[in-house]
Length: 31
Image (cartoon, rainbow, N blue to C red):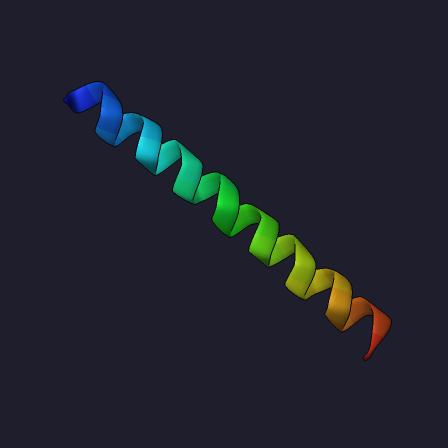
């Protein structure tokens, strides 16, 4: 069970990073 929680956390952080990247890219294009 512990490994599943770890895996979910990993996926969430990865997804959040993608979201953050998209946000910064949009801001750079439209200052």
